[in-house]
Length: 170
Image 1 (cartoon, rainbow, N blue to C red):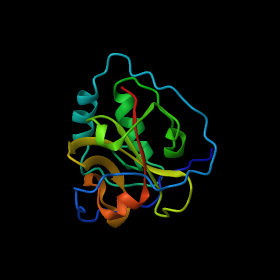
Image 2: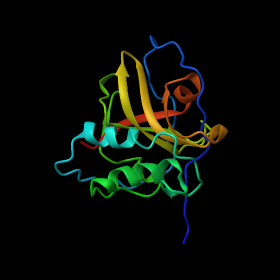
Image 3: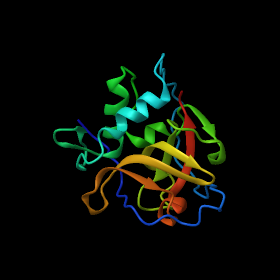
């Protein structure tokens, strides 16, 4: 079995939130479009559950809270809690849902980034938006940097340069 996990990420102080969040990443790989059926699940309920997992450690390829999560393992676990099937890898979310302009993001939308290499041309990290304040998005994700695990981060310069897009699946 081959498992592709999330690329390295870290939490760095938030940047100037008055800047508009726009992707400068050029996605170069072809990824099939997918539909995620969220049924009657509410985005807020999903985020509330995700927040109960803050502090679970990072583990490459991890999909369980007892042992730890990588970013896509975390997303999969949260959605599976509600019976929602999602892809296992962050790159598979590239063409999922509906792309939303970052300024129109809502709690429960998914936020996609490249891995630690902003020039990689493919999605390598994923989170769930928890808070939208003007042009500063906060999101919950499982981060490998400094072995932080599940945490909430803001759109620091580090994440802004890797930002790919926001997608809505609800």
